[in-house]
Amino acid sequence: MPRKGPAPRRALTPDPVHQSVLVTQLVNKIMQRGKRSLAERIVYDALDIVTEKSGTDDVLGLLKRGVDNIRPALEVKSRRVGGATYQVPIEVPPRRATALAVRWLVGYARQRREKTMSERLANEILDASNGIGAAVKRREDMHKMAESNRAFAHYRW
Image 1 (cartoon, rainbow, N blue to C red):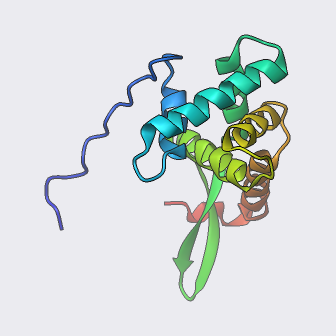
Image 2: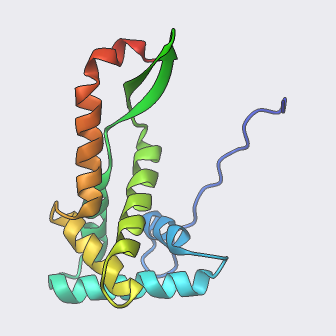
């Protein structure tokens, strides 16, 4: 087992266009096989489409609102007690909540039916900012699961 402790967290640098760490996270999550420039083009095109469709210049505000609508407050973790395994609801730390939100946003954008990834991502961002869409449903399902397993909350660790 390593004795040096956990590796220090690297701070994300804000993206060059919007000066936003959230956009950097989105680019990193879109990126596949190290193709950052392609991922950046997809994200920036998607943000342009969002600006076009929403008719507002505050595209970062819309993205932030969408991510906030997806961020889970609670999740369930499996905990073994005796011979039984319980789904124990726990609070989600803010950093993990944002990471999950971006992961779900990109994951459900990939599953959409639009032609280009930019369009898919743009429409998923718009849906999320309006409180609809698959990623928001995922958060609601997670909260429902935590609520239904509330009786096991005393098993938190």
